[in-house]
Amino acid sequence: MSIVGKKFPDLKVNAMDEMGDTFQINVLEKAKKENKKILLFWYPKDFTYVCPTELHAFQESLSEFEKRNTLVIGASCDTAEVHFAWLNTSKDDGGIEGVTYPILADSNRNLSNRLDILDTVNERYDDETGHLTVDGDNVSYRATYLIDEEGTVFHEGVNHMPLGRNVSEFIRMIDAYSHVQKHGEVCPANWEEGKEAMSADRKGVSSYLSKK
Image (cartoon, rainbow, N blue to C red; front, top):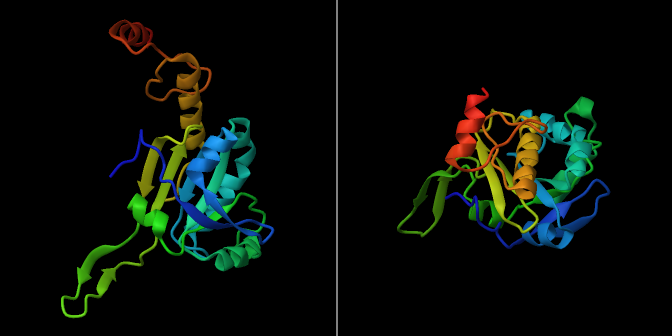
């Protein structure tokens, strides 16, 4: 179920940073206390193939997110110890050495279950034992959440495992949402920073379309 327009779940999750420090992050509290937007992106597994390309891509654009008062947080269901091992593995060996933003270690799957983003197809209960059997790896899809300064989700998206994300599109959406916050205008299709927006009424739409 979508949580766009709703508060992000109020949960603390273990996290790891590049220094090897383990701590907890509550994304909702962090957005509100620091008065920042947050981009939270989930990926399936450490030490895989598409995943490091995404983590490095977000790192390369980190200064652009910082300019927009936005924190970047990665997340998967791996443990904090596995995150730290991957953070200490070089790019040449498929690692994410050089990544500086925190990574959630949702190994108990409390948050990913709440978000309903786990690859848990065909869950089956054994009536005799009461045990649950799950097909799939029980890891997260490539889910992305943009959260505003009040902890409200203004974008969510979920990609299947093989499909890497376009980091520039998230920057565009943050720009668009910030424009809405500041000016009260709405942003039409393919809007980018510096382009014309429009008022959310018939006159505004007609005026915008007449110029196309």
